[in-house]
Image (tube, rainbow, N blue to C red; front, top):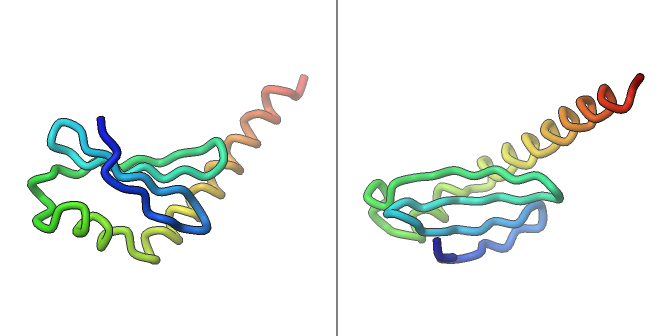
Amino acid sequence: MRVVAELPHPDCKITLFLMNQKYIIKLEKGSFEQSYKVSELDIAEGAEGVFKILDEVFISTAVERFNQMRQDFNAAYNRYEAP
């Protein structure tokens, strides 16, 4: 797997990888991550095409999902800690 690019964003770290003819889009925020895979053949414009997919609507939804992931994990952890 090789890193193709990193897309700077203030709300999360976005890294684009290429492996086995698939782009892997990895978003990270704190200890949580989301990844998405898309065939290299489905993106005619290469990495630039992937960046067009990662518009502000997508990123804001992903950030909301990170918040939900944190809430879900905290609730599960609190159940674990409770006697």
